[in-house]
Amino acid sequence: MKKELICIICPRGCTLTVDTDKQPVEVIGNACSKGEVYGRDEVMNPTRTVTSIVRVANREDTMVSVKTSCPVPKDKIFNTMEAIRNVSVNAPVRIGDVIIHDIFGADVIATKDVL
Amino acid sequence: MIEHDIVIIGGGPAGMAAAIAAYDSGARDVVILDREPELGGILRQCIHNGFGLHKLGRELTGPEYAAIYRDQVLERGIKVYYETMVTSFTPNKVVTAQNREGILKIQSKAIILAMGCRERSRGALNISGTRPAGVYSAGTAQKLVNCEGYAVGKKVVILGSGDIGLIMARRMSLEGAKVEAVCEIMPYSGGLTRNIVQCLEDFNIPLYLDTTVAEIHGKDRVEGVTIAKVDENRRIIDETRRYIECDTLLLSVGLIPENELTSSAGISINPITNGAFVDENRQTETEGVFACGNVLQVHDLVDYVSDEAEIAGKSAAAYVKGELNASATIPTVAGNGVRYVLPQRVNKDAEGDVSLFLRVTKPFGKVRFTVKSGVNVLATAVRLKAAPGEMEKLVLKHEKLTLVSDAITVELEEI
Image (cartoon, rainbow over all chains, first blue to last red; front, side, top):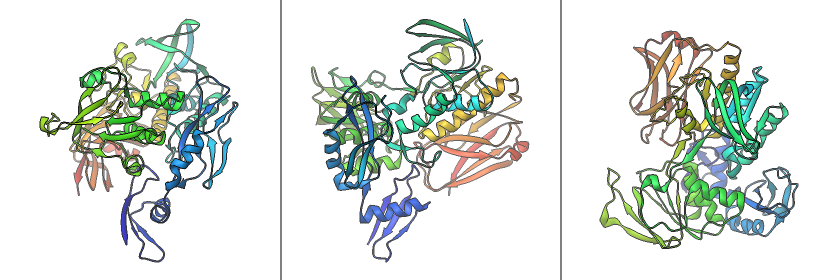
């Protein structure tokens, strides 16, 4: 089966055609190797990086932005958001600090310094 | 009155990259003035990823990209005046600003404008209806959600399919809101294709093209909006009006380069880019005043902002040393299919290659861009597609500058 989709790895947005009937799964239309991986994954096992914010409990009106350290399964996006919504963190926080360990294969890490 | 060699107005991605480049080119008396308590500019609220893919080879969130530049600014000991608002600058480069300590007057040798953009408002669009709470510009909603932790609404309609609108469609959905629709007045979206996929398709949010918001309803709070299709002149077709119940309307309807200071200093503004006219050094019509980033032209990628700011920083440093070459300038002209070309003028004896940035007038499939002067072709480039929402860069090689006569035209043909 052939599926056409747009690569989202970089702003170029190449139009990919993924053929799952071929072994291994064939991807054409990609301008780079990252796109080939994305095309295959998107059809076989779609994942997304989730970015959000966590409240900094010991600083007034302060949030720290966070992201999943690697993409999580697309159907687990809202579960990941639920977990993120349920935690808070205390300053100091630095970029890369782990806020939640091991959720759907990723860590949730801080993307901002709050000192 | 105090003195600084180079004053940079704005400490966002453009201001920071310009400061670093100026410093690395030998300028030591470089200062940044920013109205916020931290460096980073708009990146502080752009918590999503996708920044730095071209420039740094990594996919970073806005705050992470900003932190890399902020660290470089601070490592070099470049002075930053925080929570400092510039209120004017003069053609002879006196900058006036105010902060908690009072009024600051700085005599500078060079100024780099890096003030970024503001958003177009409901008032500017003249949307009919009542004036209830719940109408925000998309960037304001982004700041409230991402920096202050507010849930700005539960049932959302978004007007405008530029990147900010698309990003907020996803952001609101992730925080549990129901985004009923994104309406776009043009027949195509203004945002990056990747954002259509990961912000709308991922969340099954409908995108209605050729559609606008005709009226806002609600007394104290938004209760709904009337949307309608528009004709080829962007006028509402009355029979297509339909009501969507919602409590929030986000407007993502255009960024306006923040050039009040620039005009007040007597520098004329290009009505197509809404920014100053510059040469390849990013020098404006006023000697020693440079511009870069969103205040000069609205960018899609922060990577290009950083590149542009480096040019401005290097040029300002050279200018202060008396080494900036600004001789006979050749105008660039937007030809067939091209909305604008920047820089608007090129010095005939420019050093190195000259990058030309442009936007096309509408979406195209496969095109060939041609850069020419008189009968000479200076550069060509093929693109599989081109869209107004995706800025293009063409490189004019240094050795081709000798072929330049009286103007450089950039045009495209469909192939």
